[in-house]
Length: 200
Image 1 (cartoon, one colour):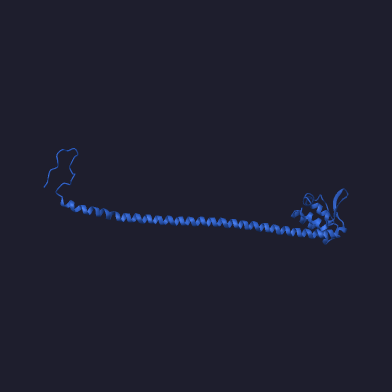
Image 2 (cartoon, helix red, strand yellow; image 1 turned 90 degrees about the vertical axis):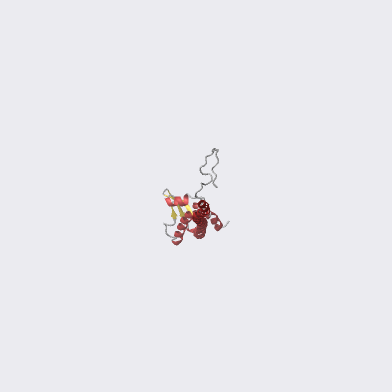
């Protein structure tokens, strides 16, 4: 297995922040290879411990880049050896590619979430509009029915007195003709044995 393949396998185990930390260390060392400040790091440093030592595969990747454990005055260090400069450059490029792909993947996931939210919002809006349309239709129908009822009631009220007047008019001439005679059934008591007087 080539160094590049080995580094690719290692980088897949990294997370984004750990890869950024490694990339910063590697780029500083490539930019200033003679600066002793960049040639080693303490595993007891809080950021290094959290991002490199405690994360699976990260410290191993630093070793693949050319850092080796050393102890100086009872203080542990990981020091870079200049003979591994080519490994450092290859590993740095792999880290850059990894971070670029990671960011693209993250952006695609974010875009997918935004699209999913937009689709949900559109569906919600569509349901809301359908509900509002249904409500408006129902209100219009209720208004039409109300107007029809009011029109029927108004028609019934306007026809009512005319019908009463028409039923009263035909009976009034017969009444006027028999003004002097009592109407049939008037003045009779049930159970009375005598027939009414005959008027002729």
